[in-house]
Image (cartoon, rainbow, N blue to C red):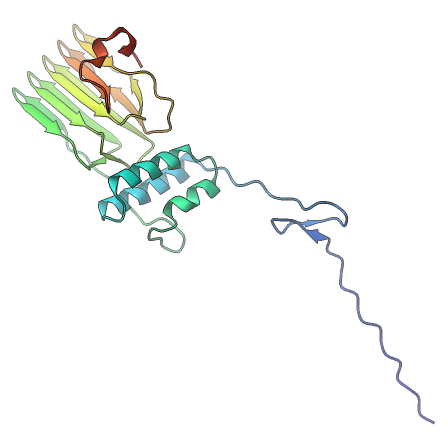
Length: 226
């Protein structure tokens, strides 16, 4: 007489709960839980700004598109918002390529006039000095690779005129002795770069205007201060 084999019951899978939207298990019957996006740090924004600066320097981005993406980078609050800004640009294993730190030679005008502008990279620290001369520093189309830069503007019987982007946040921390330092336009509410001015004006003048403003805008009562 033969005995019939009794089929074994199939093993039941372990109950791991209902996976949430981000892959996090939850208890049966509970709604899926989602993880909030990670917040972006200043270092994250500077890293994206460096990638964008390299892209515009190599011709992958037009200046107008670079300015738009840079403003979006500084306005981003999470890493999710930063990711699309460099999604179509070269990446190295998901990390930003190394971008050399821009350096700036001192701009000195003595008994002369100097004008600087165009699509140049702004170094973290720039020195500008005018002695019986004049300097015009046009940053409207400049490439900012850092969230905050410092311009040390000093004059002795000279004039320095700096034109900054319309969305820039300007802070003048310098001093004057029988001279004048003026920042025209209302305080910017945008997310543009932060430009800090230091230095000393002795019998000289520092004038900071925003893109699109008339050079004499600082003379108007509503154009004084920043």
